[in-house]
Length: 203
Image (tube, one colour):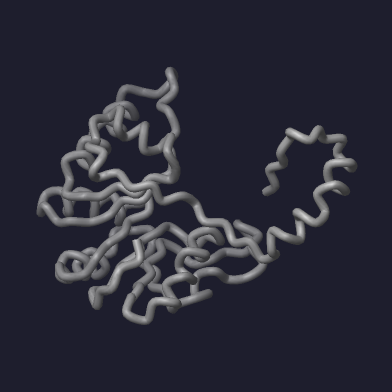
């Protein structure tokens, strides 16, 4: 994903998250990459309980708000030479950008988790919205970044060509060397009564 370019990359999200900030922090290692951050809202400690404000952790970020921001939309439409990565589409501005980029045949990138299934109790309106949203994405000039192989397989089942699906997992920062854990393997295995062929997942 890291390539040399002088074209700014606009990363558009709802809110800053610890895992996406790991990726954003990596951009500092590539001085030729110009990253511009956009968030619907700034960090709110009382809602997310993160110990620090992640919004401006690595770069100064722009906040476009909850209502349709014509200045923000206009910026994205005018700067045709820049690149765009839209994380999801859960607010009015990102929904509108997807639709406009589709109508204008503009290239962009969409980054998504594995979508939640539409339950049997979902209304017809909800089903139509889901169907229409993925039709727009499928026939857009977009590359879809998928968080894992199950997400890639989900979009393949919807008819998305493999050439437009890229595996881009969630990033997790590890602050300690794995050798520290390997050195304590016997102690950990004894503490939890694990067998030799067991394995441990930590979060």
